[in-house]
Length: 443
Image 1 (cartoon, rainbow, N blue to C red):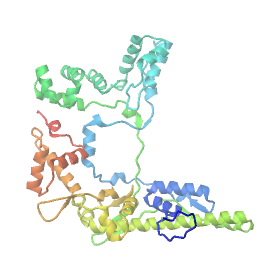
Image 2 (cartoon, rainbow, N blue to C red; image 1 turned 90 degrees about the horizontal axis):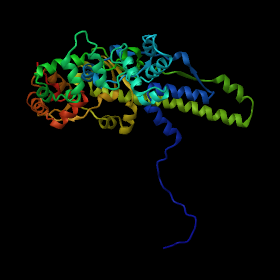
Image 3 (cartoon, rainbow, N blue to C red; image 1 turned 90 degrees about the vertical axis):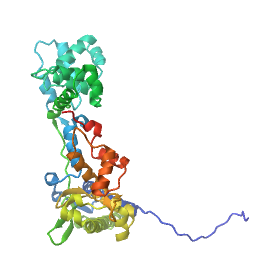
Image 4 (cartoon, rainbow, N blue to C red; image 1 turned 135 degrees about the vertical axis):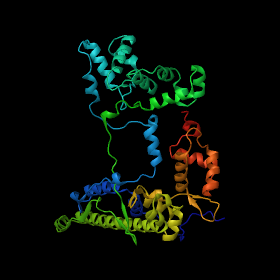
């Protein structure tokens, strides 16, 4: 083997990821909001890039939006235990302080105000009561008394340390006290929440029907007593693509109105290029190249998004004509093969992009679903299976709810869909539907 040092020439081929290519890929996957923010930041560092800020418009299509996760929304409405408040505190502190007794001593007033300030966005007390007692040099018993005073204010349930205490406080405020409900929540809350009602029935010697009535009563309670004092931030969704069907043909257009309009700052370029300074000229040349690159990248992004959307419309025509129930199985690989781009490019193109359709505004990713086998020659999509599962469960006998295995048999015999029990359980969980044991009613 020749181990001598020397200079050698070797010709090789390799793919180089240039900075421009990296940025072009980034632009493709940007949502409308991200792209707007990118352009605004670019305008700050590139004086040749001029933005017309007044061109930016906002819209909120949520009012005509048909949400694909309808069952999940219904579940959240009923099973509030899973909901967590979020938003900006408005007047809760002031409202609670206005209810305080004027007979409080200065120390008591300051201590209870600290308790109020320690409430979270849902109205729960999350701080360490002993630490607050030490800070104001009062006993633990006195701190507990002040917390009880706070818990006696409106809204009912405020100041609770957990959900169990929150519900208990509200039950004790009812015009007609329900002793069974109070006992169940105070002493058997875990069993009650897990719907192990037969054990509660044996211990308290009550019928399951009575426990069902308690459950219905508890569902009317507010698990977030401070929710009415919150102003949740509106989640605005701006469609990137508009798909229309006139009864004969489809039309696809890119919605550019939400993006800032950019133009070349010709006055700036002419004024400084006339100076004849070499450093300034190099700077202007770099910024001019950067400006043209941004224009090309935006145009390429628009072209890719249009091509992907057109292919989605072509393969999902039944969805746009007949509705969401007719969504067909489709993968990103199919789209990438047909328009001759990489699968990752399709993934980036549809990332956080929304399409306004005749049936509402949908995320482009929602049009891609896995294939489910059927007893016939045709396949169906996972979304169709979820829709049928939701419908069957909605129509079931609530006293004898369908088990996952019964749903497997039902889908196979009635719908011709071959789905495993594990898949049924997964889809049911994604839809926010509890198991059959937790759906069962006793009245």
